[in-house]
Image: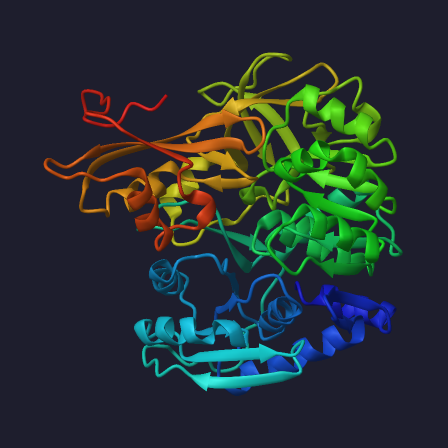
Length: 496
């Protein structure tokens, strides 16, 4: 089970600092003990084996809650703190969450959510690195008491990770312990990390990459993990790397762009950093070359993956930067990558097609969505929806996306989700959202909207309307008002 990661690490690295955030830190022994204490409280309330939600942001408390739910035999339901309140209730209902673990700063928000969601029976408030735990009844009456803690296997669902989906039917990927631990093992072979490395976590812990190939991978090795404590600011980020003597960090192409813009200043402040990993969005070969030249003492690892694959599928190692620039590297051990045509048949080397992957890292399926699962899983192969090709040496080159997903700031955004929220505005009758290539952000979200007759909306008011309904990263950068949208004979939007 996932909690065995911290049990094994605590046995070997008990006095070593496991997590540090600002002035707070816990050792491996303390992290193991705190998560066990919380797990006991969960079981004492009759919640052993029940799905447990975490709403805590990047924090030590988040990690305590993560392992506690696993130790209590539950299903981890990790939810971004940026999710608007109006969406959170539906998310908890959909995921069958029976208790929510949070920190004091989110209690006010979650009390209202719990009251609107009868299934949620308890709010569990964890503070001061997990040393204080408050069990607060939410007044819910719709939950079923779980008697005892059911035995879970490594192939049972261990966590529900959010991927792109509409507001009315969110998609949650079911990942098992085997999915994630196999991906950790194959990732570590190429990452070549040591227990004396110090890793910094900057991206949301709720993201699958941060979850698997950062947090869990680092703790498996007994590394010290530094949690970046605030909204990203380049100067603060560099100060953290410098003061904590960080050697390994995972970032987005956007952060790399910021670093490149101020490379002379940044280079002096990250002298301890040996390796930088990044994925989540394409990067132009010319820009990649500039990075390699600007930071010669850093090894860059560029990867390809997706939530449904736990996530890492391939990695371009530093030794191939010059000869295979533009590639996402070769497949990890135990991961098979093929390029197929529309009928699912393998295509010749160098020919473009859809990327499909297979391996122990591939998801169990989408939660409560057997039809969606069947649409992407064929004979054990996951159809990624991405177009790409394999060269004669087995290096993967991504050539675009079959799906409509927009990737901005390293985050995958469903245009249909944004469209639905725009259409919630009384002044709007039609909406079409697309991504436009941007050198810094990967893609800009652009919305084309049709106003209702006699309505006079403007871009500012519409963005203000969306702020209460969408994560900030999903709000369109540009909104253009048009007289009509292009549709096909079935009256469906024609997407570019």
